[in-house]
Amino acid sequence: MGMNFGYIRVSTNEQNLDRQFEAIKPCVTDEKYIYSDKASGKDMERDGFQNMLKAMRDGDTLYIKSIDRLGRNKAQIKKYLEQFKNEEIRIKIIDLLTTMQDVPTGQEWVIDMINNIIIEVYTSMAEQERATILQRQREGIDIAKSKGKHLGRPVISFPKEWDRLYKEWIAGNITAVAFMNEVGMKKATFYNKVKAYQTRK
Image 1 (spheres, rainbow, N blue to C red):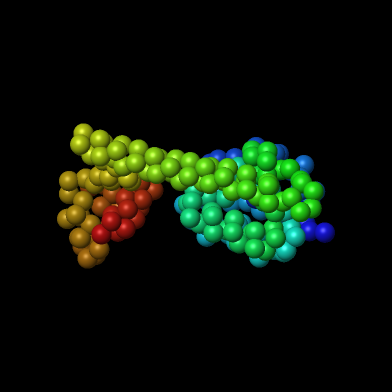
Image 2: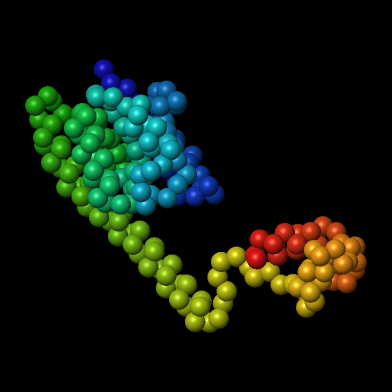
């Protein structure tokens, strides 16, 4: 008899896995077989997912909350679903009730047919959703740029005489204390500025 595995994923470190974990926990008796990732669904090269693949064997069952937890790339999801099928690893998607059903031996093809149709629709929707998100991001960036807004890390400003004083300090012509006095900075602020300036250069 195979083992029950679970896989949960969110896209960022700020998001929480608890909701998915609670949904899957009743299906997977040993929590050490629930693998997780906090990573984008754009590809399948995630530590938790890849470690789970190495651990699963023929006859095992994988539980996920929804199809997009596997990822948002339709071609890659279908590839792994096909791999699971070939390895006789059953996929049960909690949000897709047909995948949770068990059928008499010999009639698995009925459920497989229904599941294939549903999964085709859901993977298409997941991929479209990702494309829509990326499009909105691009549109937002274009609008911000058109309004002259700076995107990315904030621009760090330096005092007017910073370049000249920095060169003199590096050359040993003035002390750090003299440099700080000239630009009116305390020690911590001064060295933070120095670090930022050196990183920028």
